Length: 332
Image (cartoon, rainbow, N blue to C red; front, side, top):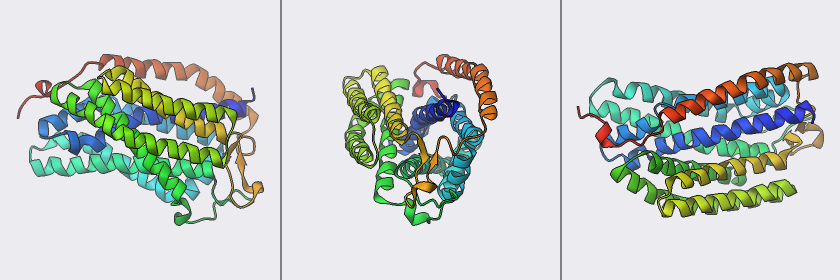
């Protein structure tokens, strides 16, 4: 297998891991005003992701770094053409991170309410815009022969991309609700499980519509199989949530997200950013890649350090695996 293919697969894996792990983070943040009926319940929700949310964001940093080093042409075109959406995502993530750290610094309800709003919007904006961004990458954007983006903001807000944003929004909300049912006890667990099923129905409709539309744009046998697998995994996860098997439900939504992302990457390859203007402007895994020597050095670095990072993050999840409830939150 060529190193360009290896690194295309690695970038796909990194973004898949990011969407699975940060996906339930976003879902919890968006559900904060829905499932948190008082301050103690909202603190329970925040504490479910407190030990892991910043580690989950490392997947995005690593994915961006891998793209920059392995496919600099792809990175440059993406971050220049999608500058405004990616800037909004960055600002939302900053606001969200600050909110997690500052919410508990003062006891006033108004202070906490403002930071709760920052957590909500800091989760909702990326949840939508990541779907819009990846839908546009898959569909193709106006690139000239020099691989420069020559479109405007409205070109990114096409119906297909907006459906992609709605799909990721629904997937992350459902994934977050299932995660809360898995990690909490008592009333929050009951309401989160019931909400996951309700959200999942609408999400399944949007996901099937989006993946079906995607396969009409470009497809492969592997992509079709992966898309069907994503739909089945989501339905299986919702069925498990219905009978309160939260572990299986979370596995189902996680697999559904993974297979949905894999569907897009499988159908996209060997392209990394198609051009809607001229085939000569299309970026591929070959013409966007770094030199073979650079890819070789990066491969050795990845082989050495990736298992260490995965082991550390796995250990973190194991340590904080227990359920929590309002009984674990002291009254002030």
